[in-house]
Structures are given as structure tokens and as C-alpha cells.
Length: 112
Length: 112
Image: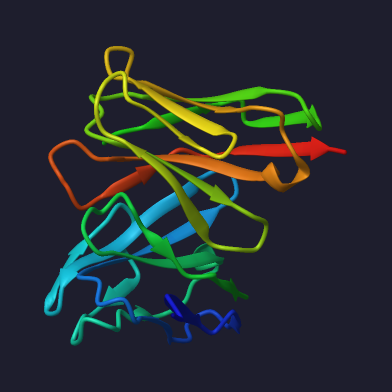
């Protein structure tokens, strides 16, 4: 089983550029979420989805868009990258309870 | 919003020593989850506690939930270098079953 796969692992953007972080899971999980991890701030929830076609905002949604057209995929879009979005991004999924999450290995994003 | 305070922030122990990490919630706990993160990797689920007084063990790691104190503790017995990493507690935000909030983590170093 591949589990939760995130791509790319590393990315450098210039301010104002847009990009999509990919997340895919092969466990048929209904729940998927995106977190960002910053020093001193811990993990913060950006967006989450409880199933295909259903998404909702987390704690820090501004500057990010998500969609969930299939159960497997949950991409995170940065519309116009800003230096404040420099962070490590984690995608996670769950099959029954939101607390027991399976995490991807992360995407390290730098915005210059 | 729910806040989780972890203590200590970091911990250095000699191999073979016991240690305890605490996680205190600002609000009522509806479930407490412990995760471990190795440097540069995603989080790995360790244990889930749902009821007051509940205690769970996995290998040499034991977690306990004190619902009245809104607190959970993670105890490692006879620590090994393989226990090194960041330990994070997570809890479902009150009023929402879909938002998992994390503490900022405890960095554990185990010296051989």
C-alpha cells in the first residue's frame, strides 16, 4: 500500500506565483485534510473534506483553495504565493475517526 | 478554539531512563490522540484515548487520559534511541468532529 502520497517533496516559488500541491490516498478514506507546520506554531489545519464534493475551512484557510472531485485526491492550491506561506505542508486522511490520521511525508515549500 | 499545551517543550534523557510528556487542554476533551514525528517525516499515529481514566500501552509507551483535569500523559519506560522524535498530542475541537487540533509538540532526544 502506498498510503498517502504527496508531491512534490520540495518546491521553491516566487511571490505571486500559483501552484498546486498534490495529495492522493489509496485507502478509500472519506476524510482528508491539509495542515501546515511552522516552527513555534505547530500544526495548523488549512482545509478538510469529509467526502467527494464536500470541503470546509480549517484554522488558516486564507490564500488556499481545495477541491475534492474524487475520494482519492485532495489537491491544495496556492492562488498567489506569499512569503508567509513558506512552510511544510502535510496531507492526511482517515477512514473512521478524524483523530486517527494517516499522514503523507510532507511538502517543503519556500516562497521567495 | 481549543488549545493544547504540551510540556516540556523539549527533553533530553539518557538511554534507559523513563520519561513523561504532558498534554493539557483548555477545553473539555472528547478524545485525545498521540502522534510521533521523526525529523523530515510525517506524523505516525500512536494511540487514541476516549474515556476518562483510559490507559493504553504500545511496546514501552503508555498513555493515560485524565478527563477531569483535561490532561493526558505519555510515559516511556526504559527509553531507547528509537524513541527520539517529536511527540504531539491532538484533540477534536469542541463542537466539531472534523477538526483535529494539535499541541506544539515535545522534542525528545535520547542519548546512547
